[in-house]
Length: 198
Ligand SMILES: [Zn+2]
Image: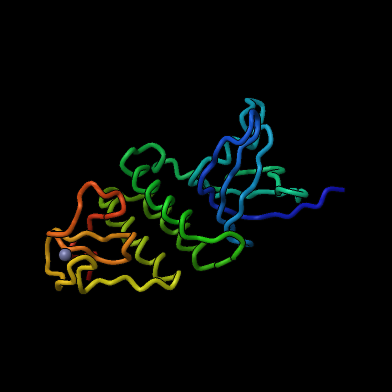
């Protein structure tokens, strides 16, 4: 008898691992961030593979392995098709998920983070505009849940008081940078409107 357990999870990313297998990083309601091996995920016949796309909300039956846990079966509950069909949404969600993946440590369940992730995908999926603002707000909330208190009143670079206009939020510094210090080419800096800061 194989030892199995069931999880409800959001797929964070998926990478090819060997010729036929891929590694799937998920954030689950039950156990937090988990890395699972999906056997045969690149074979056309694999029924579960299509359900393991990033941003999907999936019910997974996991098989406990000696070194890795494996995806037994996977059935997506929600695919958030409007995110995948819109390049601007996809770009925003991709940026958010990259940050989540970097900052969350494996194996710690947190219902609030799971709900926040789900809520973000649902809001972004139906949103008509302001994808970047929604994403910045989500990242602020996420950082706050992790216990980071973002610096919003002063520039984290020159330490001058933040005044309205052209400010950016620097993820690496964990706070605002003013218009003078902002580097538009820095991928860690998010454009934020004055309303977002409030
Ligand atoms: Zn500055």
